[in-house]
Image (cartoon, rainbow, N blue to C red; front, side, top):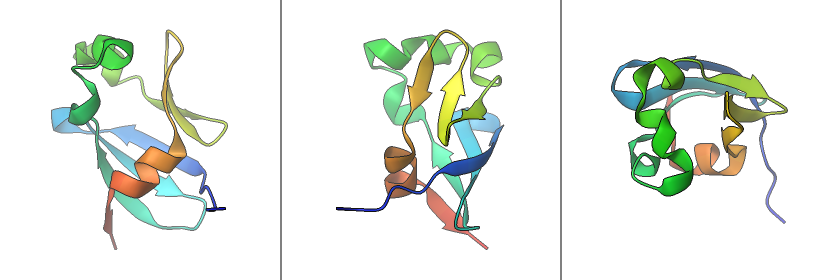
Length: 81
């Protein structure tokens, strides 16, 4: 079983990206554009809504019960120092 690392910090960036920090201390940028055409996440095309990203129980969350799980963010985010 793979360990799921919680997200402890999130901040919206330009171009539908989110700056994140995991419970391991690793920092990364997560590109959300892959989700914007899918029905569940389509509302995030509204930049004002997208900018309201926050962390809830280790997950990226937005108002309206929209979320992206930490396992996806961990897998697809680009790490930086």
